[in-house]
Image (cartoon, rainbow, N blue to C red; front, side, top):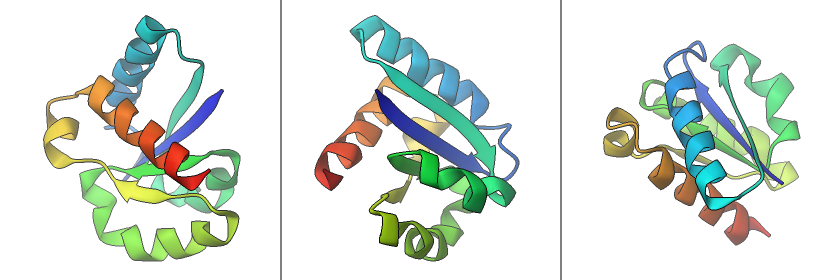
Length: 104
């Protein structure tokens, strides 16, 4: 099972994208756990996941969050703004899976 965390300001704006990503995974028969959290929950939640994707509104925190996750080998990357805005769950899922595969 792939474990993917999305992170934004409050965890609300990414929840629709999470749903689209889960739908894409289900269509492909992929086992995934995908959840959205607010930035305030990052420290507590990130160790449970294989990858963290950041919403555009918190992309400015990439360096800080990447440094926190690096010792555990968890990649942190921003979601492509166009994929985020267009709610392309399949594209964001592909991106997350590519990061997990590259880290392993």
